[in-house]
Image (cartoon, rainbow, N blue to C red; front, side, top):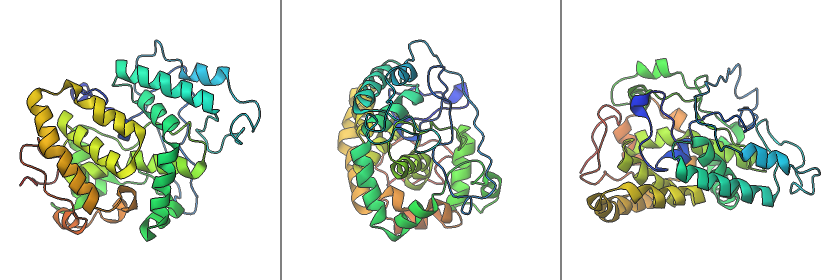
Length: 323
């Protein structure tokens, strides 16, 4: 679940670590256009201009769109009851087509881990059952139900980053603005949901991808290799998404033996404690917490201090949280 950096300085250096979540969008000549991820109510999101800067990517061998178009369902029955698009970026697919998309995406992502579009497609094609459980957890929460009803989106149009920059030091909003600015991240740069054959589940997947940076700031985890892997473990424990499992298992392959030991003895236990004591990550209305004290939020949500030795990136976490 993936992250695309706007500058070469921030280019991904880790195999699948962090890619599957944020899924910073890269265009692919054989994939459908990058339409808006899900429809939203005009009453709740007025006058939003959703622009997308297409980043360059390597296209040789990219044939997911060709695979889907070749066998596109010609009837509602063939498409599992959805022969037409359920939202703007939706590509209706049969189970066989989803299997083909998942296989090609997994192989391609292993070869080119910076291809966030492939990781996103893999998440779409394999996440149905997990997304249903995630939606059920949101429905069981008052805040989660409100999020499903209002469907907030994290874009440059909805998050006024210039206002967050003026917030007092130590607030969640200021820490988020500093995090985005220090890495050159832009909220709009995410892959669109395409292969989820349920309009509400597509929003759940969209929300999961869009809160990735909020989780970074709330937990204090940096965007280093180790930091992204730890966040993958946390997201896996929260969501059960298969693509998180792939990232959590494959990502550490490039770690040193010492780093593997720290992952097993410090980081995964921390992620387990955090998942056990903190609210479900999609049941937090992050946008309503910008003015609150970051340390206070960590205490309220039961975010445990990070174990000693987890690397931070200066200026990105809103203050040290090491034990």
